Image (tube, rainbow, N blue to C red):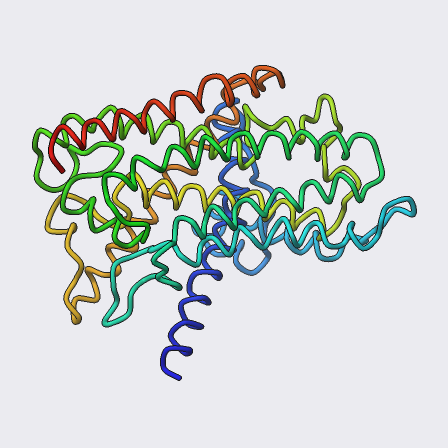
Length: 370
């Protein structure tokens, strides 16, 4: 009974902040784009009671703090219109199928060390990374189903593009993680973080524990794996310069052209939730998760060290939000690839590079007698 209670509590403590972060990630992206384009960004919505508070009210209004709340209410109260020509059952199912996998991935990611006797992970699976890749691959079904169900040429083309793109880059993403398994020797995400705490981060082994010949030789392997995983994460989440599935200048809005109201909102939530899941995976696999190689923050806290446990959660969140900023910055700084360039990068560049990196990592480990 105690196990069930703490599991449900951890689910609530993960999903609640995650949904809040998704809402405010939209605001953050609008502010980042405004900064890049030398604009002010969202600054109009004002709540009468709070807006009248001196200093705080005008500050929150100028920051655009209430825009996500108003956008959420707008999504709920708009007419949920279903066009007559769509395949209705699939049309209704597609947004949910697109949304759910993003939240299932978060279940196995260690977002902290421990609080008291509780591990800061919902499900501590020994095959956590295989679970994440299995779940992430399901997300494409929602997009393909949306394109098919709309019974319209633009969504259909967007769904086909998305399926080809995701399948192509999932291969590179999966291969980029194999060097991590070779180095760590475990598929458990918690064990991967513990290994990085003792031996240095997988992306940059100089950050972390003891530094020796093996860590020095593994630096290029870790950097290559990290870069391939990062580029694949951009492609998997349909972010620029890989947003061929939406491609507004060609396909109106791609696979969700026919959607409105909360169904469209579910696709939107799913996209940002996938971004957070990808950022969390990169933090866990390559940047040491909740660890920080200063002030003893590489070590899990004792049972009574609650502050240190909370600090580890903050460290994890800080790294993850850093990746989110990079996602947003790239969207507003780079142009969209042509489709042939996108596929050429995936099949003729990244997959061979990932395979060569696996061989290089295995050779380094063999030569250093690990």
